[in-house]
Image (tube, rainbow, N blue to C red; front, side):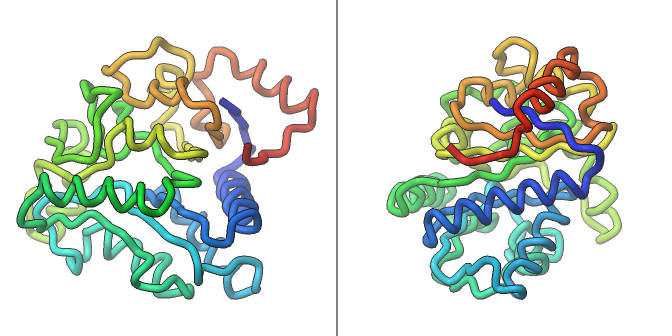
Length: 262
């Protein structure tokens, strides 16, 4: 696990964009796992900028969405499908046939989740999986208590997660969804490389439990300690509670650490 602390959020996005660009240079048909939410927005803006500058090409990439709210149409403005369309897909040359997203309105959820896992395998597995960190330690929508062996599935959302989403849905005159479709923790851990982006002081409490605490289903993100190629890209605010923060800084200064994919 490579824990890299940057001075501000912008530098986190820049480092993540550089890693994805590196992955694409190595493998033009890169398989990229996408995460939604506030944290990766600047990353997607930079990737769009890279595309328009000719620094990256999406024509052979394949992408997979990490999760989706159960019950939402893909066209719903609060769906993650709409989020990706607005912030990435419509700005780059990613072929529609190369876009794989979970369907919150799937008629047969179990069959749909099995199909999703099969599609990931058919593409050779995910090369780089983007992740954010939930305030209760969830990855995707793998809430506390999720098995480290879990696969793509329907997942009930915790009260904490629904509370975070409440204002967005209430503004649309809706109650927050009570469930989601999500890649499982085992699915995530099968990615060849993982980029965990964590910014903001609201993540400072849970982050030490995920990175420095014991492996426990109570903090799903602690499973990342088991992976051989995880890049944890942090800003100062998110890193404030890390017990070994000075040690991570020392490593950066000692070897002039620049993130590179394994």
